[in-house]
Image 1 (cartoon, protein in one colour):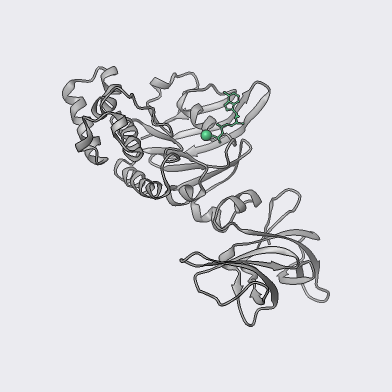
Image 2 (cartoon, helix red, strand yellow):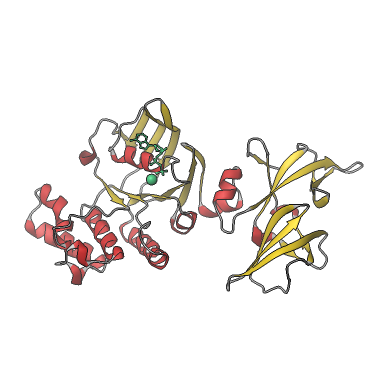
Length: 356
Ligand code: ADP
Ligand code: MG
């Protein structure tokens, strides 16, 4: 187990900056998920930690020691990739043994480590098979087994579940978490899938354009996003964003927020700029006979678990999610309540959160 400290790390390819100053401290035993859209620099950061690429600037420390100049094999870190990278001509047992043989471990030691990892991963009966005789999920387990037998200081995962179908991904998510609970090894897990990030992480690191946008527990990012990027990236169906105008109410200390001609809320205080973006999660949009916000129903989608209704207020789209099964049909007008505490406000130019 190890602490990993990343200090003002930058990476350029040629003249193109890819990582633009990353600061992150990962505690020993923590399961950290780097999440962000494709191309934001997640794999690059992971490869810098593993030592597969050189940093352009900044420091990477493992347990307080700078490792910038240490080759990958001396960093004692195991990496699990999306492409399992198994040796096709070797059995499961030999794939898992290989790194230990290279390290000149005794046959007894290797057999013990491989059997133990095989048992943890449910590979006992498959030890003599070749990779082509395994399913995708089983191959991914072997790739993890190969990492586990080395008993590394930290595990790095780069989108390890992306090649699996949805149901198997769900199951493997759970298994990787259980494994982490058993081994308690520092883990950095890269994914573009916000559901994986939400369900697996102790802490999420949300990245965009080579910059960390926010670091926090999953529900912190969900409930209290630092900016529009995080608010929009985390959560499905995604947070609604409405372009709105804010104006002080004369004779009181409130400000009225309007979407088109529709008043959606009165916010206490005076601090709002004239133009704001109002964010609200679909499950916070309340259908209410006493609601003051009229909305037109465009489309109703039953998902079984709940209902997603596509609405319009003041000419803009708004999604509602409810686990009730409301009776509404396209073309009808319904009434909504948007509680001020459920609104998240953003600067339309910078996307920064406006806190009130
Ligand atoms: P992610 O894993 O978040 O999808 P990557 O870290 O793989 O993103 O890539 C980040 C950016 O760096 C991308 O724009 C990619 O094209 C670029 N990039 C990655 N590797 C190289 C390389 N070896 N040479 C030049 N550009 C690269
Ligand atoms: Mg990647």
